[in-house]
Image (cartoon, rainbow, N blue to C red; front, side):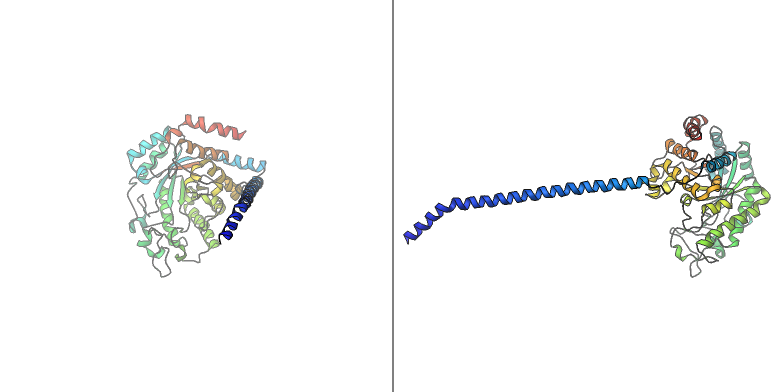
Amino acid sequence: MKLKLTIILCAIFLYSPLFSQGEKAATGNKTKQSQNKKNEAKKIKNNDKKNLTDNTASINRKQSTQKNYWEVDISTSQRAEIKAKIEALPKIRGIHITSWVAGNEKLRRSLIEKINNSVINAVAVAIKEKDGKVYIPGIEKAHKFSTYEPAIKDPEAMIQDFKKAGLYTMARIVCFHDDIMPKKNPEIAVKNPDGSVWRAKKGSTWVDPYNKGTWDYIIDVAERSAKLGFDEIQFDYVRYPTEGNTSLCRFSQTHNKENATKNIASFLDYARKRLSPYKVKISADVFGLTTGSDMGIGQDLNLIAQHTDYVYPMMYPSHYYSGEYSLKNPDSQPYKVLDRGLKHALKKTGENYVKIRPYLQDFSLGWKYGPTELRAQIIAARANMIDSWILWNPSVKYSWETLTPEIYRAFIDPYWEKESK
């Protein structure tokens, strides 16, 4: 027994180096294999990275050769002809004014004093707002249905002050968005399938754009404005509802894209016919995005231009979606929004481009707006042959320091002179 134990111990003693060497060899092989795997993984990773870089470069090269969808092909002679027609028109540089400011003698005259020291030569006054209120007296239906709000008690004096200051005057009249009349007179309201008055997300209501009674009520307001001496009737909300469950909307006529756009044109023709004795201009405000699409709301930019004297796309950069015109944050790119949007408008309207007068943003909604952002929009308009526009600020607090003749010449005109050459 002792002999067997001695033999086993001797064997272990003699062969243990071999076992150790085998383990070392195995460990070495494993280490080598692991290193090879790491090297292979690194190689694959580098190849993937190279392929990704190559693919990205390829995509970038492809995109760089693609024509931007807002660009328009136009000959030099066509451009010169359109430009000449635009330059032959009066230059309108306006501001929008609320009824309460326009109707208050002290505030109005203070505003006119600021205007006299600026390049502004036109005012767009709110006569009927989207809440349904009518701010001037003398309209039978407004008094009958209690939509009259005495913000402008003496409209004759208001017009006289504006005319004395040499200002071109526009009466802005909201058409089909109305929070009062559908409740007072459900007959002309946009309805639900059950016949009740349809309401948008926040409870707002609309009058039926197909209903001729709706037309007459709106034109009554426009006619009163024309009689007062306004130079232009500017129709706003010349469209169909967009907010809320619009699939429930029921109108007095079959509603589809074709009928919607034709009906808007017919309304504008009717307005022109009724207003023709007063020799006023007819215009319409439209969504900024209609420079590329009618958006399914009846606002075909070119068709509306055919039936009006002027069209005002509301091209506020804050109102464009992320990604529009390939811009991650359009609100922070006022020049590019106006530049690309107006190119889109030229592409869509052709000869009717001469009627385009954009609304520009002079307020902050997210991105901070100031002199730089306002000038960027004006310069972009100039670069696209347009020198007529209206500024919007809901509080009537405009960037007057940017609008002095001296600053305007210093910052705006040099760009235009360069563009004109």
